[in-house]
Amino acid sequence: MTVRFNAAEIFEIAEQIERNGAKFYRKAATMFSDPDICKLFVRLAEWEAEHEKTFAEMRNRILASNVAPTSFRPEETLPDPKVMAGLAVFGIRAEPREELNGRENRVDILRRAVEKEKDSIVFYDGLKDFLSDATDREQVDRIIAEEMQHVRTLGESLKQME
Image (cartoon, rainbow, N blue to C red; front, top):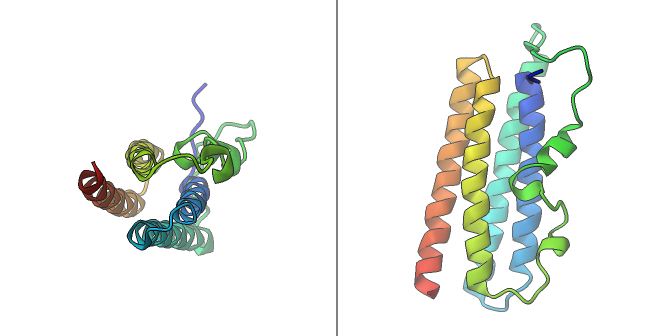
């Protein structure tokens, strides 16, 4: 049986993923004394927080409309969005302390961040398949474009350090 989500549920999952990403980057920022690398991670955390706000606004717009969100879910209850977010990207380990132990070097963390951003692009692209509204899909495309910019920014930083 295929489980399908409505747009509001997709955005709730996305919000949790972005919260997890911001937490990861804030933790990474505290691990270095180099002000440039700290600023990079703080900026990435801010971007993730902005994405969370964007997804929340999209979800609230859907919920505030007089039309109930189109639901594709079967009669059974869907997993909690935090659990779903935990299956993807930044959510594999919800607490950055479990993933960052302080022994990583800058290159290790940047490589990990690049992979997480790439994974988020794949995840969000797949989530679009669950959305029936073209406007919602366009909004997710916008987030994907921003995640691609994160990959470029991290990649440039990584090249400078290698």
